[in-house]
Amino acid sequence: MVATIIGGGMFALPVAFVHVWFIKGLLVLSVTGILMLITGLILVDITMRFPPGASFHTFTHALLGPAASVIIGVAFCFVLYLLTYAYISGAASILCDLLPPDIAGRSWLPIILLSLTTSLILWAGGKLPGFLLSGLIAAKFTLFLLLFAGAAGGVKALRLLDLAGSTPLQYYLPIVPVCVIAFGFHGSVPSLTRMYRGDNHRAILHSIYYGFAVSLTVYAFWLTLTMGALTPQAIRHVSDEGGNIGAFITALNIHRTTSATSLILVAFGCIAVLASLMSASIGLSDYLEDTLNKINCQYSRPLAIFLTYLPPAMACIIAPQGFLSALSFAGISLVLWSIILPPYLLIKARRSRLPPVYSFPGNNFLLKIIIVTGLILWLLMSYACL
Image (cartoon, one colour):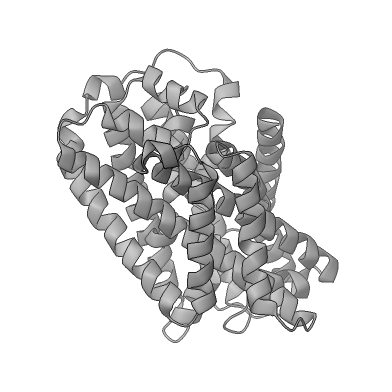
């Protein structure tokens, strides 16, 4: 849960919160996280009514029909493509700052190298992607602890507590999609049910509860570290440059007095975004391969990997500074199948003859309220971001 939630998207949070600042931003993040937690529990109820290994495609096909399953599949791919683009863009922006000046000017080179490297890892298949991802996750959290320990002295409490008066609604709406992405763990719920079905639903619920609590705590520490060390003007400058990770790390490095802390910061940024890139692209590649297999494609594996990386890589070459925008649009799309879809599926499941293993405690009226809330959020966010 924690590994799924915490990733390269955390670099977007301070930039997204620049107009509402620390306390208000953390409040919006917490409320959004609780809403995502509730819909995740709803998804547990739905998932455990089906055989182990069932996915969103199975749920939607069984409860809503084949047409709805295709629509949800397209939305799923759209989100993963946006995330893959965002993380390639973020990783490339970090690498550009590390390369010699004569090579760094060729912004397309890190994009091609990243795409080819991750493509080869996926093509190798077997346990290699899983081992590399596990190693990246372990290194990510080790570096985060070292980073917080080394940089906590530069945090200014008064800067964090600055409320700066009332904030118009128009500044809150664009940050909700980033908060939705920050707690987008719903794709892991089927995996949790497959892992823990041999015990009982309590193990799944404990994983979700504890994962949510730890992730929110890590986010709070991260926002304290970054927004306590940078001024609003510095973060706005990062936002003006597209909100990319390289610009954000450069801004933080201005305030670093030791080369060790600076090195840890850069290493943490690289590993965090690479872990997120691997997670998003593995999910997208597996989905595309499954789709190609259903149409009896002879070269489904290499074609799926090719289709996973070519469109995002081309988009990064054309528009390399779209990290924050891509996360925002991905968050808007994620609202459809992480907030609106689960309660609607549960209403359908309760009307079917599928017996529950775990029953979500809310009644259908609460589920309808969540659906309406999600629709309102989706409309307001779409209006604010388009």
